Each structure stands twice: as structure tokens, then as C-alpha cells.
Length: 310
Image (cartoon, rainbow, N blue to C red; front, top):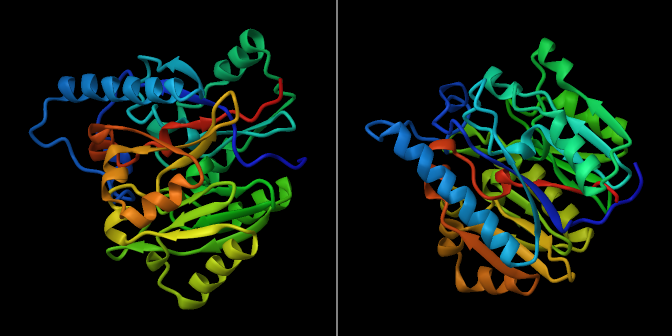
């Protein structure tokens, strides 16, 4: 792969058709709650409203949002998280990823890439499909598992059942990235996706470094971030559990930097943390508490970056 810019001005979002708390993902996702007494129909409608609020906020900030409708059949309760099954790259490569939960495997849709190509002039010259690793129970869930420093060609990964160590290293070798793997825990449980504890922008990194229990690993990761010119903004475990690690830097059509996050994440930041982030871009947030509560993911999970060339 060729060198890439770190951030993009367009994203792919999927409007959910059958949103609910997915029992297949609950065991590995400590951020996810069961529906309990909540009405499933009301929860689904509210998730659709929250999806629209986020998409509208990003568009108002000048980010190009490609909205796609989820397919009603088969039911895909986590379809609004396309970043787990798809990544795109500046040399025209798109990658499809192996997913741990069987219900999530039908989220992969080549028609989305076809639409970007045929109707919006984006060029996808090669499709790399890694889904066959599901047969070996090896999973790597896109930019949920992989935090990519696209400029310095470093891939950060918090290892878990959804981020297989051997597959992660194979991915790095195949796509010319240096691997930086570590383990991290939330109340004793493996953190299921790297992007709930870490965000990497052009010149900053948000990270819940206290979740990396091994001191040598923690020092190594922080040192690498600093050596690559990133201002490290540490967040606490409590803030991570309010999705302060699940944000994404983007840019508007005129080049203005934007940092997307949820209202919950924004509200838990200290004045210092917020000011540090605002030095890197305008904060754009939306209230997506229903999605965060029942799906265990937040704003960054909802955004598949579009780096394909035009």
C-alpha cells in the first residue's frame, strides 16, 4: 500500500433496520447491556433517530456522509457499525474482515463499494476478502481491532477474542504496517475492541493507558505515540466506559478539522482534555445513548472512513 493521509472527509454510515442488543456479542463486550424491560420497537426507533442526529451533525460540519440502508433480511442487529467489516485505503484497496459473531458476518456488503464506485466516482481497484479466516476461528474486526497510523505505517491492536494475534501480525505483514500489539482490560475483562480505548488523529492520541496493565507494554505504546509526534491525551477507565476513547478525527470539505464523539463522551471530559482536543479540531457530538447502551459501541464504531481515490 502507498502512504496515506491520516484523516478523510467522507464516511460510510448504515441506518439500522433491526437494531437490538445482540446476545451473540454480549459475552465479549463489557460495554453492552441487555434490553431488559425496554420495548424492542421503541429502542429500534430511537436508535434510528440517533443515527440520523449523528449523520446530520457531521454533514452540518462539512463532512460528506454516505448513508446506506440496512437490509431488513437477514436481521443484523449491529449493522450500524460498518467499520468492523470494512476498511478502505488511498491506493484503491478495500478490505473485508472476519467477524466473531455469526450474525455480524452478513453485514459485509459489496454493493456499498459498487455504489461508491458507480454513483460517486470513487475507485476501488482491489478487494481483499479476509472473511475465510472465520473458518479457522480467527477474527480481526476492521478498524475496531486496528488503530491505524496511516502516515507512519503503524497498526495498534488490543488483543482479544475479536483480534487474533497471529492474524493481526499477518495483516501487518501483508499490508506493510508495523505491528504494535498489547493487552488491556476493563474490570478484569479483555477490552473487546481497540477503538473503545484509543483514538489516533493527525497529531494527537487519546488513550486509556491505565487499562494496559503490563507496565512495559504501556510504556512502549506511549513512547511510540510520542515519538511519532502525537500529543497523548490520557483518559481514565471511567471515561473510557463513557466512550471517551471512541472518537474519530475527520475533516470537512474545506479542510477544517473535526473531531466526532458522542454527547456522553464529551460531557465526561475534563476542561483540560477538552481544550487539548479543541486545539486539533472542532468537536462535533450527538446524543446516541441508546446505541451506546444496548450495542456497546459509540460514534467511532458507526463511521467507516472512506479513503478510496476519486
